[in-house]
Length: 252
Image (tube, rainbow, N blue to C red):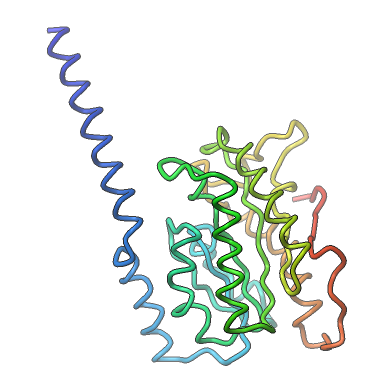
């Protein structure tokens, strides 16, 4: 009986590994995202966003921000996140979900899935893919600002936090060398006094932002965008020093 149960357990492990492999293969295929991307294109045909909007894009942490448009008022923003995406996939679809809008700015959250299982890419690969993203956007739209939101800590992926910190540091350093590219630190305020992820900022899955987390992010991101793109902003604003925006603790 024990031998039978052991064999059954091994079979289940193999099946799970095959399923995970198939899921990873699927996530790497462009057609995996076609339904989601086409739904955005369909909504554009119904109501085309005005040129100069601010595009938020990236993985599910952006896609699930359901109150984004209202939260960012009076800024005109659209959500073009697609869940489970990695940076190379955002690059692949940039010509469909970013460039057509001629945005004043793009706010990107991505890299979380890249560094985690099953992708397990290196921080250097994440940097290279972000550099490609900047090249794609600025080759077509050199005046567009790009804001990279730091990869967040989470309890589910805490074992990958050192790699995430490394990727954040690499991208922050790269942003310092670029015009119209800024790194925004939304990660530091998500850690408690012991340096661990604050559980009240994560949903029950230990990964995705809670409503409280989105309010925290809003308090960090919106002032940056309002300063440059709000009603009272002028085109004569200087580049922020260092092109990196760091945040301390917040009382949320």
